[in-house]
Image 1: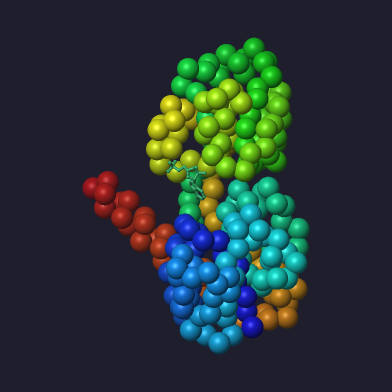
Image 2 (image 1 turned 180 degrees about the horizontal axis):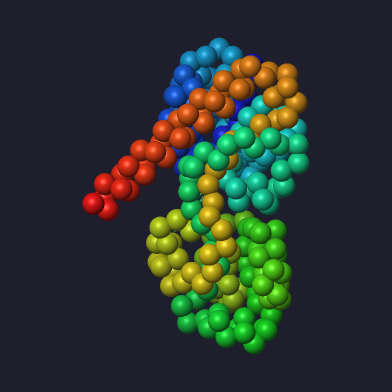
Length: 226
Ligand code: AMP
């Protein structure tokens, strides 16, 4: 049996075409079913539906052989015991620092003030501000980070940004781009040894589908420029 851990939402939706390329069809929609283990058209492949932040844990400890998770989640969790063969180029976004439009971030940083930063990404934020030599008090939140500067809980947030619409709707502005984020395939190292042929086949199919999608995107980008 091959077990793949996925989270609901964007990663699940964007993984379906990759699974299809590997000949795998998930038989149920996780938004309509309460089941946490979803069958596929192949008797020896199943999908676990877990929280995004739990995907690395399931794969690390062998609850799943493979998983798909954002680079943000991997950096926060650490990647011990995980083989990361592929950047799948899906669920792309960036991780940024944002502040209220009326907050003078540049001056606060220049003056060496101690910044209060609210985030779910404590490890990423700590490393980023340490490298800049900015002193920060980190406030760990689990969601709706955008609210924190609006009610004076923090001066800044570190969060994922895709279109920028959520920041705009809350009168926040992006002041630093920390890094680009996309989702990675992760594999349990022991499973890779024990089920090598089957897992390799899935990795190869995902790799082929990812490179086909990225060449299709570059053709689109080129044709939209001409
Ligand atoms: P947007 O308004 O398009 O900039 O999206 C921002 C909101 O969506 C924030 O609350 C983010 O935490 C969340 N978000 C954006 N991109 C992703 C992603 N790739 N994975 C998970 N959450 C995301």
